[in-house]
Amino acid sequence: MVKIGIIGGSGLDNPTILLNAREINVNTPYGKPSSSLKVGNINDVDVVLLARHGRDHSIMPSNVNNQANIWALKEQGCTHILASTACGSLREEIKPGDLVFIDQFIDRTTKRKKTFYEKDRVCHIPMAEPFCDKLRNVLADAAKELGLRFHKEGTIITIEGPRFSTKAESKLFRTWDADVINMSTVPEVVLAREAGICYAAVAMATDYDCWRESTEAVTWEEIVKTFTKNAENVIQLFLKAMMMIRQEECKCREDIKTAVVGGQEIGAKKEFDLHSTIRTVPHWPKQGIMFRDITTLLQNPEAFRYSIEKLKERYSGKNINKIAGIESRGFIFGAALAYELGLPFVLIRKKGKLPYETISQEYALEYGTDKIEIHKDALEKWDTILIVDDLLATGGTCLAACQLVEKLGASVEGTAFVVNLPELKGTERLKNYKPFFLVEFQGG
Ligand SMILES: [Zn+2]
Image 1: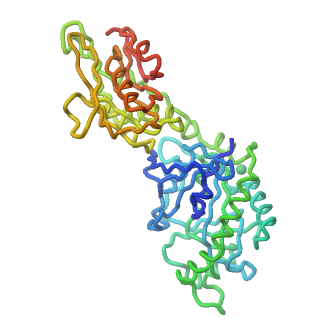
Image 2: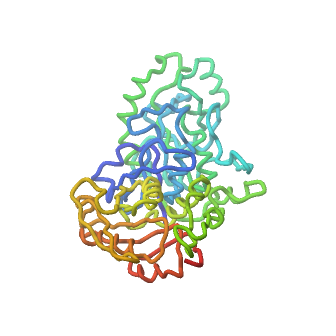
Image 3: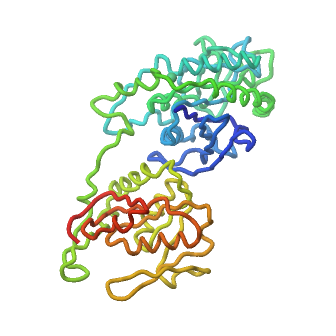
């Protein structure tokens, strides 16, 4: 299925355009992307919107976390990326307001991370044709239908910035056959190719850079003026183009499969032995009990990340809008998962721990009973909840947690654990609540 990541294109998040909109905050192995992601549909096409320089345009070009941006779109399942960028024109015939569908770049950046393959593996990704041909054709067809002024190809030179070019540089770049100049296309396009995503960029000329003697030197004010005047054209172009994009085989997605020297492409899942990171403490807290101790897992950052990644993989994109953790170790895994999925986190605690109005649910212990509680205003009737705890034994506490959620009128979409002790048959007890776990230990 086609899913389009849009970088730039501010205006598309207008609620009359972007339907079923959700805003999510994500994290990636490369850090946080430039902005939250706005996810939804435009004319029945799934889209993910990202602001390259932050929603308040506060991130300067050298500091854009391109790795995190592309990775975040990849994780959302984007098959295509449409990027928009302002650029300076190095050609008389590319007038301010013109759109250029660039097909080549010259890289004059110096400070940026240009690959996902920084350690362990080397990746020589082919870059003879950096931009997706098919997407570029779609853009040209759409622009033609809309009657926009456009150039079907062009070479962009990306400079480090933040300063603009000198006249000498600007003239030099013209002799290199560069057509337009900006500060943002590289390495965005390179990382998209490494991620196996079809990528096309629409460069909107805002000025004549500084090579052209007859015009005034470029100023930020002039750029913003031209950009604002023509931004609507880019929005209309994206709206038209995204309906014409088809899911089809493309070379952009194939190159990476053979580009990594002696190894797998990044993102290919590496299995991790979680089992061995959990310590067993015999006869604790009493004779005959084999205690499965997750503190050793938590002290191993790779193991902790792997656990959260595994849970994220399973629950990402599912019909869940809140995560509830059960005291106390359920907070650790539940909170980390909620953070990763950009979802609210709700606490289910032992009796007497929550400060505001609560409701409670009783459950049986070996001898006697206990109670767990939740804040009355923590859930709404339409909420769908994932309940998280570290360990599934008899399932008594978790079952009570499910009942607590239902008492507030919300529904339980699933229950997730790191460890399952199958002999205690917790999964049977929770069979109506889709129990899922990462590892099992035989023996109580
Ligand atoms: Zn492609």
